[in-house]
Length: 284
Image (cartoon, rainbow, N blue to C red; front, side, top):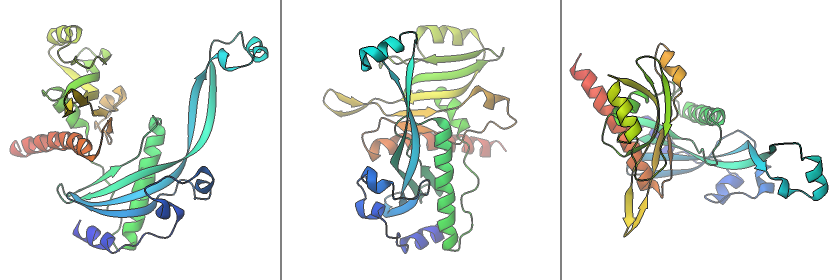
């Protein structure tokens, strides 16, 4: 970590319109001149928790939108009258801001992939790999080979946070000991799925459940009668429970008003993992 921070503190980002316009977006015309799917380091910032490397990337995203017959002229409406759904597909070039944080507070490297705009999970995975590979490439230029290879498993935090009194659970995917698969959502802001009547009654009827997917949010007051509700989501799938090792490599943090809220949520994840690791160490 010391070598990485020392090296990147001396690193000068290469000249590019992305660097010149940071932190603002390029125009659509200028963005098309940027090499696609190639993260470019545009800014290095010193934080209280370590060193942040900010990358910009041009990526092609596919947007799908359901259209109404009212969007068309009468002649077209007549031609489409037999269709129940009309879906428009549009390919758009977008500029994404991704961050790699060399965290001295945790002796870990955090990749913050920009997943704004409800991009699909496959796209998130590709973006993550692009950032990791670019970081490893730059680290190699500093003489440090492939520092990012093994990812931290976040799966233990899913059950830990569900069993806690932290926040409000708004989404939960789990299986029972009889292999019944359940998926529940609760979007009423004052209701916690853990204490919701239907879920609570079912939970009391079985000795154990195994969660694999979890959405949990926190109510944080920022002014009188004003709250924000940042949300943490573990996008697990039931198939991970049938794998030899239950591995969950990413979490999604949304609805933050700023970096303070993001760090609050991030700490909830890291603290859950630290407690579990400490427990495992004490019982060896």
